Image 1 (tube, rainbow over the protein chains, first blue to last red):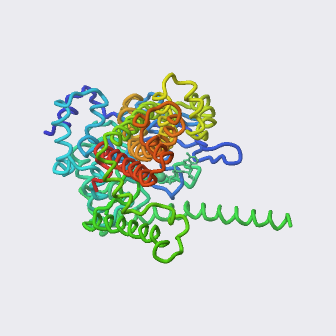
Image 2: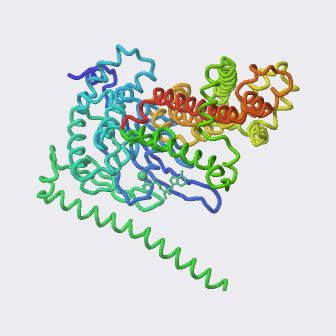
Length: 291
Length: 275
Ligand SMILES: Nc1ncnc2c1ncn2[C@@H]1O[C@H](COP(=O)(O)OP(=O)(O)O)[C@@H](O)[C@H]1O
Ligand SMILES: [Mg+2]
């Protein structure tokens, strides 16, 4: 058993931690004429111990949803609760992995991974075996003295996963973690992520814009509506594991889900286009009228 | 070639040294030509024609560098520059960080800072002489001013431009505000501190000479006034070759100091060039 897994097993809490509830949440950014309502009356449950994948058109409020769960932002109305208690701010058991790499450039891979434990006041002799274990699990033990800038994009994402995993957080919030990677690396990272997850399941909220990635990874797929974000469609992905892109390609059930999801997503994405057209048309009408 | 912390390309080419030597030699040749044009053609090059030629200056330099007075002057200027610069560094880094992290303090103190900042250090010289008990303190104060504002402003803007995700990631990993400051804000600002320092020490050299000329012309002996006084005394004494020797000395000293600061900075920010 790995060191982190041992630590986990010794935890007293038997029931899976990390249930997140959003109850009629609203969130508006900006004020006055610049105000933008990103979420309105959004209710949603993140089931504990499962891979909850959130997908939605770009700009629909996925990152906002994660920021509310992480506690970086507070809702304007409604409530966000984690295991029944309201979320008041960031905490290391609801860990956010950011959209683009947010590794600390000035720390080596090892220091990045050890950061949270050092911040928690643990001694270096305590930290070393845990960090070593986690780095081995993401296959980067040989790179521990490198700086993030010296690593490839895929390696950076793995360090980011390691930095999160060492905390053994009850909830992991992943905001498009593989965005920007080339297709090959992305595929490898997805496999990698699923293997890591199988060793060490927990509550995950995984945000993506790629439907294939979503179906490959999800236990539960949550499709958000166009902005303001609400749950538009929720489906249990009960496909057998391990899944690969190849097996899903041949799987009728997977293809049905995909087709239906794409339809919903397309419909939602079109709304923003239609909204834009309408806005433009009304602007043009105004300029024409003022002449 | 790699981008250095200043954003200026740092020469890594094997030809770099050779190119620098060739460029400097070319300058010397042009200067020699300009200085001698009058003798050869009867028509002087404007400006340059009045200057001593590099050969004369080199001969003067050979004479000057064996005099202890020259080295005492250089050492005096160096001590004043380093004193002012180090005090400025020690004061400006915390101030810049405080401006960046404390909104209330910034609202109160920044306007005052901004009104004082545009006042050129040289305009401070008379006030400094009146205010400070010794001339030494007055000149060091001027070199301090030369460096202080530049470092503060750069540290402030460096700290403000830290990617907020770094701070949020750290908070998400359970870091306290103190840990965020020590392990995120400080190192993320370090490259700005290095850049600002290498500029600021050059500014201190720029102002030390003028401060020495203005303040030192009154009471000091010929060897106690620093390089500024060396230049001024050479002017008054009519030894124009020595003026140029003094000027080039300051150029070299400023260059060496900036290079030393960049080198030290590179050691303090090893992640910058590790790519
Ligand atoms: N801090 C902010 N201030 C103003 N508008 C914001 C802010 N954050 C997000 N938005 C806006 O809210 C909408 C949703 O953003 P986001 O949650 O990042 O979308 P997604 O992650 O789904 O692409 C976008 O239109 C974006 O412009
Ligand atoms: Mg986003």
